Length: 265
Image (cartoon, rainbow, N blue to C red):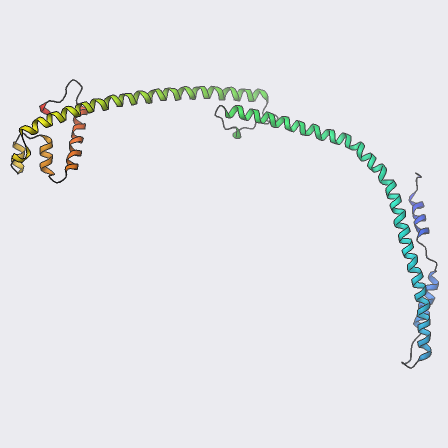
């Protein structure tokens, strides 16, 4: 393909865009048209002259317009041909450039995937030790492998210590539950003994035989249950709760060796 200078291209374009009429001719026709003026609607001579002059100028206009169309088509065809020829080396160079660009893009994406893999593995390892990985910068650029290994070792040690503390807490909880269960069994045993004693005293001092009155109640050897029933004759549930509360208080003060005797009443 020949190499054209800007001047040569301009000359070829100018030669292509030419019209078969000179400016002086156009100016003469303009003056001829403006010299025609009808004096009235009855001025037939100037009317005919105006029509013939218009026809003459219109024929020239149509000729020039056809030339414009021909020039436009010629320019378009020529431009398409030239542009197609110019586009071919551009496409070729794009392919050459893409060889490096695509490889660099592939390497960049591969490196980013490798970094994301490192971050994901580090995050999972820390989370398995109970560490909130979102609080730490795990990107290799901000956290070297040495720094990460130190962080992981500390997390492992902290988790071991926490697990041991949890085991000790579970043991202590189990011990306290066992002690509480033993105390509950002992209290239940004491409560059963109390019920037996209450039953034996009730046979000796039936409530129906006790005289009504505060002084009589205080002087008679009544059981606590009999006294409580006397104070709350219409509320058996309240009597039961009071008796159980008093039993519980007494049982806390007793030891297994001093099982209830008649003194409790």
